[in-house]
Image (cartoon, rainbow, N blue to C red; front, side, top):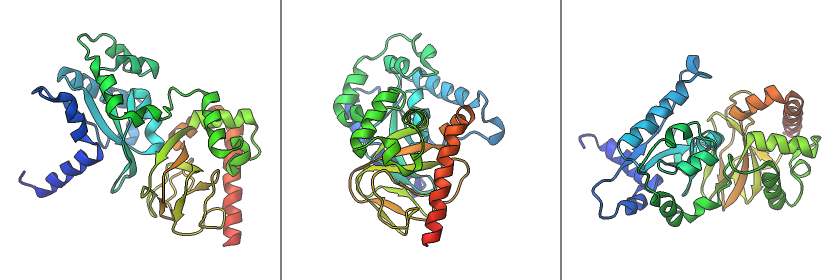
Length: 305
C-alpha cells in the first residue's frame, strides 16, 4: 500500500468483522470470495423510491456473479430491521466507527436462500432462481458463531414472543415497567414495540451514545448497567431497567448530550426513527401517547435540574 492509512483501515475491518475467522471456511481453497457493503446512503431527493432496492440488488447480483459467500457490513442498531429484512445476520462484538457511532457487525450469507425466504427478503425472487448453491455455508456459520443463533431477529420474532422476552428481562409487563409506555394498554404497547423495536446485545465498554452525535432512536435499558456522563431524563446518572437514556430521536435529530458506556453485558430495546415514522402514520393515537410521555419526562428532568 502506498497510503499507510489504508492499511490501518483494512486492519480495523479485519478485526471488527472477524474476517480472519471467516477465512477458515475457505481453508485449502484458492477461490475465496468476500464483499463489503459500507456507508450505504441515498440522497434525500431519491428516498422513498426504488433506488435503495436497486443498489442492494446490484450488490447481490455482483456477489453471485463473483461466487461470494459472505457480504459484510456494520449497522447502527436503529437500522437493524432494514438489514435483517434483506437477509443479514448479526454476529460478534459491537465496534465503534468514528462519525457513525456504535455498530454491530452483520453478514449476508449469499447462498442461504431459505433464510431470505423466512425473512421475506425483497431479493428472495432473485435468490430462488439460482443454482449450484453451497449448502455448507449456513451450518458452518452458526457453528463458528453460535452466538448468532441467540440474537432476536426483528423479522422472525412474533409480537407475542417479543413481549414474553421483555417480560422476562424486566420482571413485569413492559407498559408497566417502562415509563415512556405508561398509559398505553398492553395491546398498544405490544404493537408499538413489535412494529418499531429491536432488542440489541451490548458489552462492557460499548460506547452507545456520544455527546454531540445525532440521535435516530429511543434507547431503553432492559438489563445490565451503564455509565452516564451526567443526569438523565430521570434526574440521576443512574439508569434502571425500563428507563430510557440518551436523547429521543423518533421525530427529529437531537444531538446526544451525554456519553453513555456500558460497564457489563446488557440488553437494550431500540425504537427506530425510521420505523416510527411509518407507525406514526398508521397508529397516530399510540404514537402521540409515547411522544407525550417523553415530553413529560423531559420537562420533569429540567425542573429537577
